[in-house]
Image (cartoon, rainbow over all chains, first blue to last red):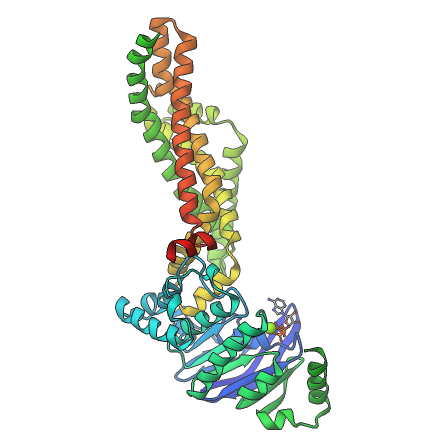
Length: 246
Length: 236
Ligand SMILES: Nc1ncnc2c1ncn2[C@@H]1O[C@H](COP(=O)(O)OP(=O)(O)OP(=O)(O)O)[C@@H](O)[C@H]1O
Ligand SMILES: [Mg+2]
């Protein structure tokens, strides 16, 4: 479980995350929605300590970071190992083959035996539909294939949560469909996911829970139906605008 | 004419292998280490501890001064200061080490800029991705950043190396009997300056050309993961 308490973050004096209190449940898929600039990426990056928050604390399983206190780099490493991040683009190491990308973390960080790591990676590649691509380099893959490798690499680290920041917004519709299918599968298998997306149809399909961020504040936090059927003015406006623009 | 060439070529090539090649390789390797250290230190201010920050600032100013100094003055003058000048200050350095020091400090100053640019050219997201996976700073540098930066830095560094090979002829001015010095000595005996200096020029040209070929090969290798079509063909 991820538990966020009183998280505050500002950039150059501008408040971006405003006293966020939030829990993400295990084996559930939480979708974070919100307008551009609402602070979705910042929130996700803070969960991985890529951004250091000004105040507040985050607990993930038995690891925690309190941003008001000092923390060691060892503590951060343990904390980070609980989650794994998939970005919008440029996830893969271009100089490493697909299989090396996936086994890098397990071998170098988790100190897994290399052959074990390779066997696991091959299974994961099969799951994401890329069994034949182990020896390819990222530049030889389509954007969608690259994202599926990135997801496989996340899974190889056996994190409690996978955090995905607009994993399909740089993709063409067909590639997007392939990636979304993989995420659906993981969601059904009970992998805990936190997804930031602008794809409302997908959000509706996959979300167990929706968190709606607006100007750095949480204005909705509850089940998926409740959000999409909400009569709240701001949510209505957000959803309507989406329907028109997307 | 052929007799003169056949007589003197082995001596020139031998001096080349003994001094030009060793001086170049040694100085370049040391210079590259200096360049990487300078580039890494100057790259960004450390976070946190104010004492470390203060030390960093002093080191930073010193390193910038070093880079400026060696780029702003001729290599020949640097060589003379180290070999002929320093003994007056009580520091005596034999000719070969003196040349290595001068050349590697020179390479370090120039290549540090190349290395810095190459490190900056690796996208920030590569650092972040490595971090999220949990790689340590050291692992990130050696396994993720350096391999990518090396590809970017390879062409300019190769050029600097080829330049260095030619510049080692300056070592003749501080008593090192490398290719150029030996040619001068032979010329003093056989009075064939045109022939002899053309000959040594040809040997330098051969060395440089071999290095250019090596550079092409290395670039091809380093770029192989970016070259889609090539790779696909070899795999299928
Ligand atoms: N490193 C940074 N320095 C300064 N401001 C930043 C930085 N990162 C984000 N911001 C600001 O924080 C706000 C929230 O950014 P964030 O990327 O979290 O939004 P988002 O909800 O992910 O938006 P989008 O949907 O466009 O991705 C924005 O106003 C942005 O300009
Ligand atoms: Mg974002």
